[in-house]
Length: 610
Image 1 (cartoon, helix red, strand yellow):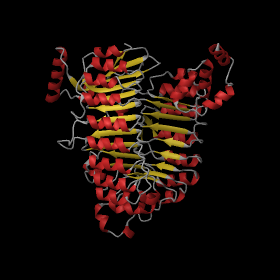
Image 2: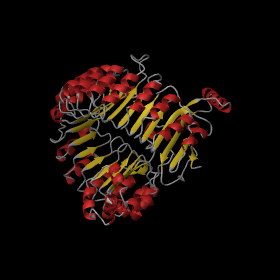
Image 3: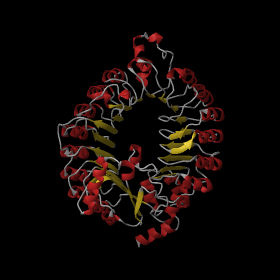
Image 4: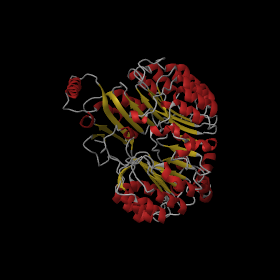
C-alpha cells in the first residue's frame, strides 16, 4: 500500500516542477544529475530542460543532433576530440576530431548556447565563420584549447562579430599566422573582455594593441600572451589596472648584460599592476628576478616552467612567496628548492614539477627531484590537493609519507625518469599501497614507472585501494596478465584508463575491461599485439567503439636496416603465433551512442563495430 501511494504521488507531479527545477539548479555534478534523471520520466524531463552545461569526453561518443534533443537549453558545451596522448605526439595527426559537424548543429539548433570549449579538435576557418554567423551575437566564452586548423583570419572575424565575448582562450593551439590585425580588431570592438589567453602559440602582436585592449576593457583581469618583450608592455601594465593574472612575455637580456647595474637594465621601468597575484614569465633569468620581488608577498600562483633559473635562483625567489597556492616549475628546482617550498609555502594546494627541457638552451641547470624533496613537500604542505612530478629517484618510504600527510590530495601524477642507472628502492609495491590507503580523496591517479617498478602484487594493490578513483594512467607496471586481472577486480568506479608499456595480452585486456563496469574510455600503447587485434574482440559490447591505431607508417622508417629488422622480427613473431610486445601498438575504445564513426583515416582500423 505504501509503495502504491508513493507511486501515485510521483505520477501526480510531486514535487512540483517549479520546485524540482529550483533544486536541480543547485546540482552541478553530472553524475548526480544523471542519477536524478533516472528517478522517473518527469525528473528526466526536468533534468533535460534545466541542464546548462555538458562535457562530451570524446566527440564521437554522441551525435550532435541527439545531444541537442536531449538537452535543448544548453548554455555551455565542452567537446574533446583527439585522445590525450595526442599532446605527446603519440596519435597520428589525421586521427580525427573534426569540429565541423558539431559546429553545424550548434549553429542550426543550439539556441541558448553562450559558452563553447573545444579541446584537441581540428577547427577550420569556415567552421568558425558558421559559428560566428549563427551564435556570435550571444557568445560569451570561446575556448579553442590545443586545437588546430584555423588562422588569424578567423580570429579577426571573431573579434569583429562577437562583441559580447568575455573569454577568448587559444592556449597551445596551432594557428596559421596571417598578421597581427586580429588583436587590434578585438581591442576596438570589445569592451567587456575579462580573459584573453594565447599563451604558447606562435602569434605575434603589436604591443600598442594590447595596451588599447586594456584601455577599452576595464574589467580585464587575466591575460596570457606569446613571446613579446616585457619592456614593450610598460604601457599595457599601466593601463590594465584590474589585471590579476599575467603569463607569457619574454626577456631579451644577453648574458653579457649581467654585470650592468640594475638601473641600466632595460626592464627597470616595468611595473606590474597592484592587483596582480598570478604570474608566469618566460625566459626569465636571475638578472631579471628583481622586477617581481615587489610582488612576491602577494603572489598566489607562480609559473617558472619556462625560465633560465638555477636551483639557487628558485630558492631565493620562492622564499619571498609565503602565500603561494599554485606553483609550476621544472625539475631544475631540485630537492633543495622543494625543501624551501615546504618550509615557506604552507598554503600550497597545487604543485607541478615538469621534466627539464629537451633543448639544452632552455634548461639552465639540470636538476634532480627525488624522494628527499617529495618527503619534504608531504610534511610541509598539508593542504596540497594536486601533485604532478617528474622524479629521478623514489623510495617506498617517500610514497608512504605522501599517504600519511597529504590527506587532501585529489590528483596525484608521478613519472619516474630514466636519468639514473639505478633506482634506490624498487619495486614500489608497498609504497603505492600506503599512498592509496592514506589519500582517500584521490580521484585521479597516474603512475608511470620504469620496468620492474611495480610487480603483479603491487598492481593488485592499485586495484584494491582505488575504489573511488575515476581516471588512471599506468606505465611499465605489472609482470603478467595475472596482475592486470587483480587490478581490474578492484576498480569498480574507474571510468577512464590509459596504459603504456605493459606486457599484457589482448585477451587479458579484454577481460579486464569486462571487470570494470563503469569504464567509458580505454587507451593502450604497448602490449602483446596480434596482427588483427582479434583477441580484443572479447570486450565488444553494445555502445562500445574499438579501433586499432597503426604506428608503422608514421613511426618506423622502413628504409633503415634497424627498422627493417624490427619489422621482420615482428612479422615472424606474429606469423608463428608467438607473443610479441609491440611498443607502438595502440588500441582505443570508448563508449558511444553515435555508433561507428565515418571519418576513419588510413592509419586507423575500426575493430568494433566492424
